[in-house]
Structure formats: structure tokens, C-alpha cells
Length: 318
Ligand code: NAP
Ligand code: 8YV
Image 1 (tube, rainbow, N blue to C red):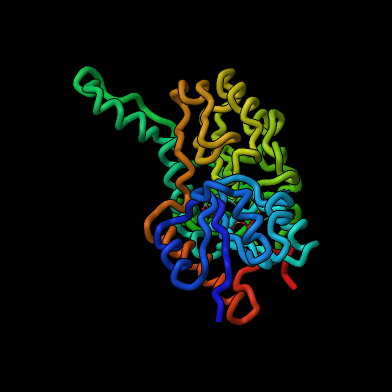
Image 2 (image 1 turned 90 degrees about the vertical axis):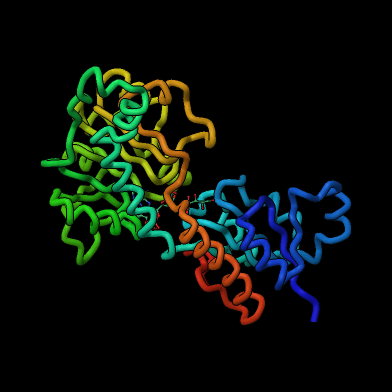
């Protein structure tokens, strides 16, 4: 029996490539020199795409190239880079990698929160720069007594909230609707949540519906002692408004894992001492990236062996 043909638009981890090579005819798009010639020969045979969250949009341009496309298996839980509605309209199933990274990203979120409040990277630099002998490191801000608002109480947001219960801080949230069976206070708008919080943790999906959900008005409501933590997508926060708010002391500090134009981080943010900057590493442990990769492979195998995807996104569930 012939092996289904799959295209990988941009590199995924080596273990994913090896597993897909073993099971499918895998075409590495970025290594194909004559892409026009490849399309002329192979386009009609391509049945799957193995896509990466951070490697460009997967939309009509890809769907048009491969008229026999059945499945887009994406590496990552966020799929704002995939036109899922467009895929659904063509009968293409889209899968992501939910469940296997929630705890890892939640751990990182709490670490980023504490690093931002207690200024851990700054303190590390202080020791390395030999400044400790001159004077003690300046006293920091604290998590003690702070009210934490979670913007997006989904799988990761709930894992963050569970961890914060152990830190003995009040937690509240905003989403498009109040959730049944959730014990945290609900606020009907991002501004209302920010006004009731000293720390705002952003963990909604990216995409058009959440673009600049955190804008100047939300930052103003968070207030001068407020701290913003963003682990969702850069598009959710109006980065220019954030820079301005930090420069003018509208909020106290920020911890960021994601940016509007990754991997480019505005020089103005890099120059600020009250900001902790991470290079989009929420899920980036060896163990969790391996689990995400395995789920990409498992989705493709289940689709081609059994005609069912394991973790289809909502737009393409049948
Ligand atoms: P999820 O389970 O789908 O939860 C998303 C939450 O956001 C839901 O509670 C939803 O509540 C809320 N939400 C959705 N649209 C909203 C809107 N327009 N306004 C307000 N709230 C909205 O997703 P998840 O698995 O927790 O992941 C969340 C996101 O984290 C991903 O999509 C991805 O972008 C990001 N992420 C980042 C990293 C990283 O490395 N930094 C790693 C993994 C994920 P309602 O439906 O009630 O509105
Ligand atoms: C990864 C992510 O950085 O799952 C997501 O939505 O943003 C992260 O887990 C990404 O998938 C790696 O490409």
C-alpha cells in the first residue's frame, strides 16, 4: 500500500521528522529547491500538512496548492496561524496539541510572574556584574497581598489559577462568559478585571477576535502598581501602548513571553529595567515538546489509519 504524502512547511523537532519519515512520504518544503516543479509533479498527491505554530500562516495559499489536502496537524495548542474556518469550509480537518502542555506553560507563567515581581533576572545580573560587594540589591515588589486577574480562564489559565491557590492570593478572571462551577470572581470586561487586579495574566488565544484586547484603557485600569504578564500571543497586547504605559509609569512592570513581531522585540522594551523578557518558551522543555511532537504524529497516523483525528480544533470537529 502506498504511503500517504505529507508536506512539512517548516522544520519540526527531529523526532517528529523521523517518526513521519518512518510512516509517510514526507516532503520538507523548506529544502525543496524547485518548488514550482515539485507542485507540478506532486501537488495532487499531498494529503497532509505538518505545521508549526511559529512558521507563517497556513491558509488558502496552502489549501490551493494541495487540492487533495485532508488534514493540517499543527505543533502547538494555539492555532491562530491556521485559517481553521477556511479549512473547515474545504472539509480539511485541523488538529492542535491541547492537554500535553498546560502544566508546563502554567509553571512557566508562575515563574515569569515571580521573576518579574522579585526582579530575579536583574538580581542575577547584579551578582554577575560584581555589584553586590558595593551595596545590597534594592528591595523588590512582592506577590504578597496582590489580587491576580486571569484574562482567559481556559486549560492553561485554570492550571495557573490552581498554582496560585498555593500562593495564597486572590484570583479572578474574565472570559466571554462566566463559567459554571468556577470559584473565582468573574468580571464582564477586560477593563473591569484589570481594575480589580494588581497583576493581569493574559492567556487567551490569539487571532482577530482578541487583537489588542489589552490596550491603553486596560493598562490604565491595571494602575501604577500593576504588573502585566503575557504568555498568550503578542497580538493580544497593544505593544506600543504597553511601551508607553511602562515609560510613563502607568503600570509598574511587565513579564512577557510573546511579542507582536516574533522574534523581534522592540528595543524600547529591551532597554527597560522593569521588564522581564523571555523568547516564547512557555512549552519549551524537552519533555513537553516531545509530547507535543508525538501528538502531531499520532493525529496524522490516526487520521490515515482510522479516518479520525485525535484532537481536532473546534472549527473542524464533525
Ligand atoms: P483554551 O483552553 O481554549 O482557553 C482559552 C480561554 O480564553 C478560554 O477560557 C476562553 O473563554 C478565553 N477566550 C477566548 N476568546 C476570548 C475573548 N475574545 N475574550 C476573552 N476571553 C476569551 O486555550 P489554552 O489551551 O488555555 O491556551 C490559550 C493560549 O495560550 C493559546 O491559544 C496560545 O495562544 C497560548 N499559548 C502560549 C504558549 C507559550 O509558549 N507562551 C504555550 C501554549 C499556549 P471564553 O470562551 O469563555 O471566552
Ligand atoms: C510553542 C505555543 O511555542 O502551543 C502554543 O500555542 O505557542 C507554544 O507551545 C509553539 O507551538 C512552538 O512552535
